[in-house]
Image 1 (spheres, rainbow, N blue to C red):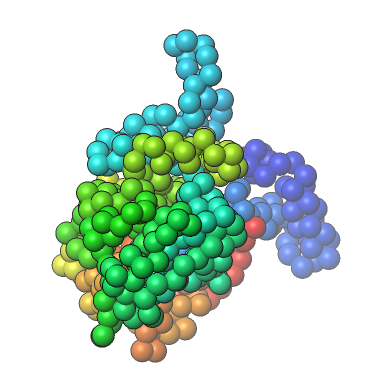
Image 2 (tube, rainbow, N blue to C red):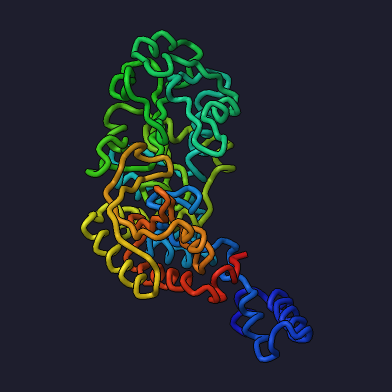
Amino acid sequence: MAAAVERFGRERVKRAVHDAQRRARAREIPADQVTEKAAANLPTSTGGLCPVLNATGVLLHTNLGRAPLSEAAVLALREAAGTCDVELDVHTGQRGRRGANVTRGLLDAVPEAESAHVVGNGAAALTLAATALAAGREIVLARSEMVEIGAGFRIPDLLCSTGAGLREVGTTNRVELADYRAAIGAETGFVLKVHPSNFVISGFTSAVEPGELRELDAPLVVDIGSGLLEPHPRLPDEPDARGTLRAGADLVVASCDKLLGGPQAGLLLGRAAIVDKLRRHPLARALRPDKLTLAALHATLHGPPTPTARALERSRRELRARAERIAESSRAAGVAATAAETTAGIGGGGAPGVELPSAAVVLPEHWSERLRRTVPPVLTRIERGNCLVDLFALAPERDEELVEAIRRGARATDPLVGGASCE
């Protein structure tokens, strides 16, 4: 129990031991199992968040924390956890600029941007832009881009909360350049284009791209959403920061914890005059990221390919071979398992409607709940009455953990099923 004290503190471990002793005295458990039962009643996580295996087939699952960090980013978190030079120039001994090395990394990755700034998340980035550029003025926005992105969070509500007014143009399905041009006036703060990141409008539609909007007499802010910095061959229709700036955007807003594969953060990239105005705004301090976010983002920009990038490179052939091996191991444990081809998605507000080739282990439907109750929990999806363990978002090095979780689920008396908690 000494190691448990180091992780959870003496008082919490003491309560677990006392509870196990009470059960032994009541003859609910044998006396020689006190230590074992006390350990089993302790959390499996020190941070209160439970690590899970993402077998949903959704690469950037918002409920599961979106992009998993690279090993380089995890190491950077450990290095920055103590005292560090987050706002110190160690060469001069004077105060340094927070996040200067991250800014340089972003400008190297997106040379089309004259300047860059980082805030807490994508919504914070849009909030800062709206407050600094359009408070008391108007933001011109197409009706088809007044989106809700989940949990009741609506872009129009966020924009109006900054003191800006909205000037809606076009209709639900169609907007023309002339609509924008007619709305521009003395009260215009900027024109906003929002990527409809979690839905698709098809049929009788029209939209205006950034290259056309650059002709308007107003700053152009584009929220690309998913944080893709440059084009990706598997996501040809997903907007990226470099292409959007080349097309004429004055400011690009994006999230870092999606296709970029980094920690939760909001990116602001674009013209130096605009980005510097945002950086100097009083709200910028309230929205700034902490040292851990900066460290993880720096490692993401400068380190090896992220888990997100690696997932996008996996072929269906590779995924099918993994699914066959896992299904075979599962059958050896007495589980009715097969392998099948399926499709996966990006999720997290990226590449709506795009289906990517994948493969899954197919189990009976009740296994969805059974796998959620293993340690670590395995999150799957139910499709046509089956439990699909989709491998698209799961790194190959986690396959053995998955096999072991299925084996545990097959053992009805295994104490790890429905046992220890992350809390």
